[in-house]
Amino acid sequence: MAAFAVLACAPSASAVTLSDQTLSSAGQVISWRGVSTDPTGQGYGPPTEQTCAPSTCDSFLLHVRMPDGTFPKGPKHPAPPGITRFNAEGPTDMPGDGILVTIKWPTDFDQWNLYVDDTSTGQTVAQGIDVDSNAQSVLIPQPHNGTYRVTIVPFYTDFDKVDLHYQGEARVFHDPTQRHPRNTQLLPEIETSPPANFHIADIPPVPSNPTGWRLTPPGTFDNSCYADETAQYGSTRCLRFDNDIRNVGTGPLVLRFAYTPDAFVNNCNMQQEILSSSATVTDHPAGPCVFHAPHGHFHYQNMGRYQLYPVDTRGEPGAQPVAASNKVGFCTIDVNDYAFGQGGDNQRPRTYSFPTCNIPNAYSTELAPGTPYGPGGVPEYMGVSPGWGDVYTWDLPQQYIDISKGVPDGVYEVVSRSNFDGGILTSDRDAETGVSCVRITGTTVKTLQEMPSQSNTASLPSCAQGLGLKPVKRPARAAHRAKRTHHRRRARRR
Image (cartoon, rainbow, N blue to C red; front, side, top):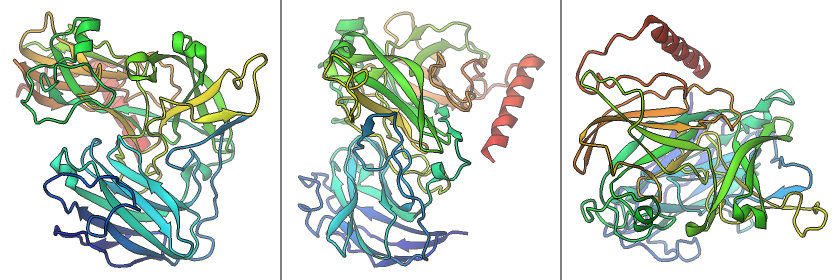
């Protein structure tokens, strides 16, 4: 059983220097909580360790007193021949052993930054500073016994008051990718959460931007579509929502394309890199990608599909959707640290972050004949690590289903299907669809029921429970198939 050392951090007018803590066994977990010292939510300016004052930054000393041989595995850097990757957060897909230090807050929008310094050298050995996530999770790689300072810096805590609070923990991390039999294929597995956080309003009547719009309170705008969404697609009434695509597999979802002039003119193709426990990778063709000119970054095209199905008075969904989304492209990064606090193999450091879809994040030492680019072009990577989900929030561009025509008030199922064409190779495909039952009344959307994730090929579930009705009895064959899938998933999760 894990031992927990809890550091209390009560709200006050100044930040708290937390009590020194010692990590001395593999089963130990140090946990703490923090709160911003600025309840007015005005922020602190540059969110760096060097510029924050002691009155605004939480910190504590972490003493490492681990037995010899606790961290035998060092980092490895799997990539195709001739390609060298560099990661914004530091870890690779095989980060090696160390101490995992994580802080997490409620939303993906407002941020805290995290620094870990080795006091014996004065050097920063790990830092989490990238935006667009609900956590910073860093690895102190193969630490020596000694003292490290952990510093938590507030950043962007001026939009959503729930983000004035964070939770933190430090624990020993043994890299699971290096503890399988040699040459074991480590595949991702996609689980699509039920769509959530619905809006038919709160969008300003302006062109969209890559970071979305959550700068004003709900009810400020009646508009539900950005100006460019109206101009490009004719959308005037947009059902917006959050979508979370999680990697619950043993391996990372890694996508790579060639950053070449051709890629900017619709000649972009993704390769999925399949990781092996031997620190090698193989390529699997994943399908098309596209450069999204208005926002200056690339999308993997066939990651998701959103559809809206009508629901009858018995709670049964119709056979055909009445509306769908124009969105098919995704920039995949680690956004939701859903495995935080769980321990086990799926709690990992953050590996993929913005601006991973904007600029090349690797280079090649092998030049293709007749071009200044590497083999097929300068490589650019995106992906989703195990234990993380890629979240598109309701306010982001094209994150909606167009309900401008033929969608009266009523009950509907909002269906989000990931990997709908099977372009991504995964270990299992029984949870790639997320379904929510909602009632639309004017600009109000009430969630009636969130369904368990299911296969893309499974029949849509009934909304009867959400409507307070008894479900219609399904044919025995379909019921048996659903039960069999349920038990197979339970067995796999054990």
